[in-house]
Amino acid sequence: MSKMTKIQFPENFLWGAASAAYQIEGAWNLEGKGESIWDEFVKTPGNTFKDTTGEIAVDHYHRFKEDIQLMAEQGLKAYRFSISWSRVFPDGAGKVNDQGLAFYDELIRELLHYHIEPIVTLYHWDLPLALQKKYGGWLSKEIVTDFTNYAELLFKRYNKQVRYWVTINEQNVFIPAGYSLAEHPPGEKNDKHMYLANHHVNLANASMIQLFKKLDIEGKIGPSFAYTPIYYGNPNPENVLEQHKKQLLNNNFWLDVYVYGRYPVYAKKMLESQGLFPDISTEDYQLLQSAKPDFIGVNYYRSSTIIKAEDPQQSVTTVRVKNEFLERTDWDWDIDSTGLSISLLEMYTQYNLPIFITENGLGAYDVLTESFKIHDSYRINYLASHMLAINEAIDLGVEVLGYTAWSFTDLLSWLNGYQKRYGFVYVDRDEYSGSLNRFKKDSYYWYKKIMETNGQSLYEKQEK
Ligand code: BGP
Image (cartoon, rainbow, N blue to C red; front, side, top):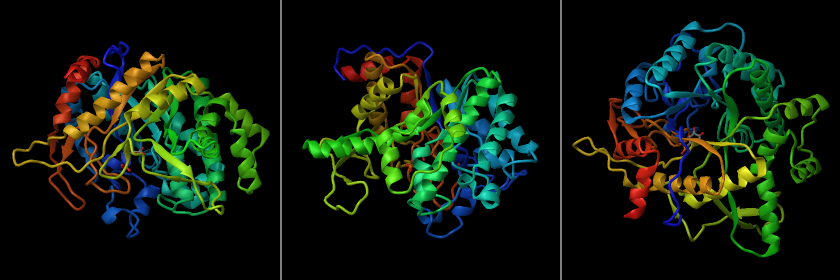
């Protein structure tokens, strides 16, 4: 960012932090909660790092008051969290678990008490296991009705208390990971299933948005998407063409459906030629086209640099390469704040919808000192540079509603255990156990100031 760019986050910009039920709550089988597909998946040795589970996680279920107290003290304006479907409907449909709902009632009440805007994610990957067993989860169209009923209960119950709703978290991550890579539940390697399940998620997303509008719920609704800008490592036009194709199969493949209710032409054609494109009825397309989101949520962590692959057998002929201009995280993710400006600009020009940055953060090995401090200057640098990139996009005309950093407390990384920490608040636990005590990191205090000054304190940093 040029030194002269003014810091200009809009008034009422929603500075906050984010989490997801499975990664923080624990209490996996308490007070009437049903099992989710993640509760089951983690039981198989080798599925997660050192076989870590979210059975206790960071025990937010029992410590949410302490956590919200820490949020209030930090000056958080918004908090994004997800509701566990199987805590509300233990069997995914049918009988409601009142104790589960009471937990979310209290959580929301507590947030509002401290004037923290609750942002609710309806689905952050923890599908009720009962529905997986009953009809194969996302593989059946039946799920659209069950999901819409679940959403209806929450819309009606929290209308006027919750004003921002995220329908689905990172469909573009959990669908390939669950159905093609076998890294997430249900652990399949079946591309035909992947595209079918994916289509049902699209229908569920649209059905929820349609209902939200029909019920005239106050507030805004949209999906959260993991946007990864794709760069080409070689400007030979043949490579550039591969890069464009990749872009259409990645980002646009999902976003075009959310916003326009159609699949990009090239992607559709290619999948049809491979027999992978699902049968889609006229009614399906009508539903998809009837439900435009109010905003697009963006989860941004990194960019990806590719070149055309030599192997002609590969269906997508590209490979990821190292970007010599970028540094990497402890987990080898390219650190690229400019990529966030690029993403915001690309998305806003293509889809013309306000953007909410629903996740962004740095996973690192933090160290708790003997005096209970955590000096995470690397996280401060990462976050500061990404905030400046957002400011730059705003300067270019992009409408950004808010920013919920990943994450508030340390939490469980789905496949990387408890060692990969993202929080402003350190939680004392490792893969096996710990006191679960909370400690404020240096970044906690730094972010407090950012929020107090609506980003102006970034400017101080720039001048240094
Ligand atoms: C996103 C997920 C989050 C979170 C984050 C960090 O894809 O929405 O739930 O896990 O990534 O990922 P990881 O824990 O793999 O580092």
